[in-house]
Image (tube, rainbow, N blue to C red; front, side, top):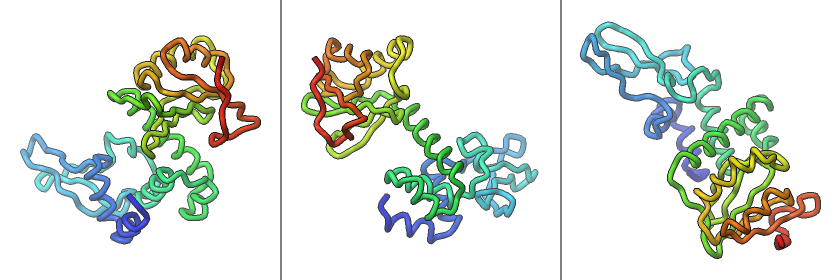
Amino acid sequence: MDLYDFTALVGGGKEKIVEYLQDARILQREVYCQPCQRDYTMVKNKVSIVGYMLRCPDCHRKRQLQTGTFLEGSRLQVDKFVGLLFLWAHEAPIKMVLSMTGVLSVTAVQWYQYFRDICSWKLVNSPTTLGGPGKIVQIDESVMVKASITGATSCVPNSVGCLSKRDAEMLLPIIQRIVALGTTIWSDECAVHGQLSSLGFVHETVNHSRHFRHKRVHESR
């Protein structure tokens, strides 16, 4: 979604936002009332953060659209939610998020972390292959592995700072399962990452106290 698509989405009001989130299966759309053998219908509800709720036309049982989704229990208005999601997807810094959405700093930080967690969970639990010969996957301290693959960015979970032996035992099999053999992997200078060379990867390191991700890394011996 680019800026023009986003502007059109939020400009259409909550109903259009809710429809978009239902299409993305972030909010519920189809709920069946077994006793009445009827589908719930969507009705306006001022109390709900999304502005709507589901209700059986016969018995009038009610159900929130966010029930059973990761928005359940959230108090963030749905338009603020899509704003945060859009800005996170475009790697906007927190300072920009605060000025553009008006949310509290702690709220923006928590949602950014939540989005990263969901991305990590999805990637780890889905049959995904990153990299390949001539491609680069970067492991940094931001709890992510980012892969530069034909302009796309992907991620797998990592631990902050230097990995313990237990962390390595957990992380290395994930890297082997997700990252294709022959991939060049950039990491920090933590000793545990030295095992990557023996696992079929081209391993290079960077000292983050002196270099950022666009600086040349040092080949690991």
